[in-house]
Length: 234
Image 1: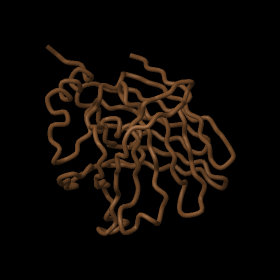
Image 2: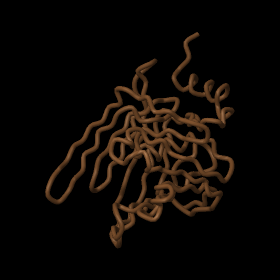
Image 3: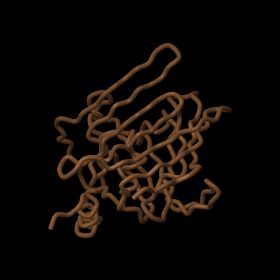
């Protein structure tokens, strides 16, 4: 019997799931074949539409989730492992006032060592999907092992994930019960940048309902995204 990619993911969730807490692993929670989520994005006093699509493409070992975000100032596509939801490649086009910049990334060798209580992340841009596979349950702090971090930041710079508890968020004409988390630099550099805040729905496959994050260093405006609508296409 040949199993579909989604059936394989569900079986892996059942048998490997969240039992190994020594190393924090993300596992596909049963994401649909396709979904479309629309948000409003507010930067300072200006508000713009933002749309994300998640589509399962390819078959067998070549299967990937294609995660695309279209905003007023960038268009990004990440290709994600269908089980772990880690990014394996990306293409990002940024629309600046003085230039259009296109960057591509492909992971050809990944040897990051992940220890107890640590969570690997290959690319910060895949967090809105990656954390949907996080084993939400309790208030806890983890160290992010950010692949390639030491190349530009040095071994003393740590990224951190904190699960802060449950909160209710009103968005898209509905009140959502959400897991609230934050990400950012760990001590002793946590004061350098404002942390990003995330609210993922407790129900279903945990879609991202709201997020706030600084656009850059100190003094830059905050970027806030709030869900407007969610559409699942099986």
